[in-house]
Amino acid sequence: MNQVNISDLGNYAGEEVTVKGWVYKTRSIGKIWFVILRDGTGLVQCVVVKEETDDETFNLEPILTQESSVIITGTVREEARSVGGFELGVKSIQIIQVSEEYPISPKEHGTDFLMNHRHLWLRSKLQHAILRVRHQVIKASRDFFDQNGFILVDSPIFTANAAEGTTSLFEVGYFDRSAYLTQSGQLYQEAGAMAFGKVYCFGPTFRAEKSKTRRHLTEFWMIEPEIAFCDLEQDMDWAEKYVSYIVQWCLEHCKTDLETLDRDVSTLEKVVTPFPRITYDDAVEILKKNGVDFEYGGDFGGTDETVISEQFDRPVMIHRWPAEIKAFYMKRDAENDNLAMGVDMLAPEGHGEIVGGGQREDDHDTLVRRIKEHGLPMEPFQWYLDLRKYGSVPHAGFGLGIERTVAWITGIRHIRETIPFPRTLTRLEP
Ligand code: ATP
Ligand code: MN
Image 1 (cartoon, helix red, strand yellow):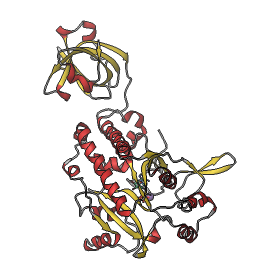
Image 2 (cartoon, rainbow, N blue to C red):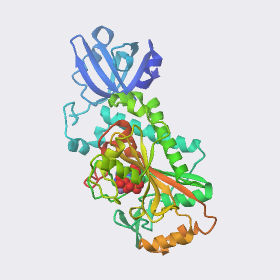
Image 3 (spheres, rainbow, N blue to C red):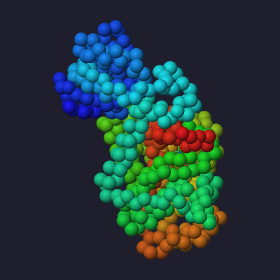
Image 4 (cartoon, rainbow, N blue to C red):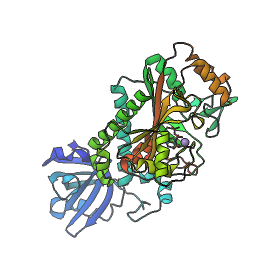
């Protein structure tokens, strides 16, 4: 007996196969009834006809409640009107478990209710499609860096130093002292870049984000490449090459899921290199021209980002930021010491910042001065300063947030649906 995935049914036309899964829906029209079965790889309509099956199987219709688990054997038939283009002519159905009063019915539920049932909501069509895209975004990311000669160097999750201040850090007990959950693997990636040339890390990061926005999680996944002998321009080259790779990969490999999500892919098709590059000053000009009341020197808020990104049909990179609002480790512009060589990439269609990065300060004494200027303790940075003592070179990198990228590619407005079990200011369960 051929046990097959629903997504592969097309290879078995005319053959008898067995599929294992869960009842999505049933529908009866008297002498014929239908089960829509899902198995995690897709949906298939299974047709039960009185003459083609035994009485026991035919009488199961009222028993097969939503999400009951079953094993169905039948013949694969081409059926253009059916989901996936094939249906199953049922020979027999074996019940594994009858599901009792599944709480998520086809009727509309509020997001809070659905989030409380996140462990079950994952089975729903749209959620399922979003998380399959997430899987492909992560796969494309790993493939991209692996194919371009980067080495995976994992950064630790427990950290002792609070590189950019402690306000957004989660403090945890660590034996007889305390530690922080990482909010970025960057400093460790800099050590990695000096050891391997091109490196990246991929893991969860934690930020005690107290603002309730649709773009912030307290636990999110970030991929962070770091490259030795790399300046800001080359850093932007890598960022645009990487982001366009992810998008093109998803267009090719997530067709069905993007269709399920009703995503307009024409805007994604435009995401090819080169991406526009503008300075912070240019971005402020754009805001002024569009009548936005913005004070020079600050960071862009969500609506500012939307106004800026709407001027372009692909992601835009904003570089050379006021140094005061950027981290201590950012290199300054040789032509204007007030500007930091940082770069943010904004996704189109109002999805906001997806990448933050830049060139790092590589001079030892300058870095010491910056640490002092930022009022940070020197002691925890001794190892980091070592990197500027033993063969320091220009280097740069960036971090891309997986969930924001998935939100953009899937067209989902709220980031909480782009991760299996979201953690936010108000949500720690399930
Ligand atoms: P924002 O200003 O939007 O809070 P940030 O400047 O704090 O972002 P970075 O520190 O540059 O962001 O982090 C790099 C990337 O990580 C961001 O471009 C974004 O994609 C992602 N990111 C940052 N904070 C969060 C968060 N709280 N939830 C989800 N993704 C995040
Ligand atoms: Mn932030």
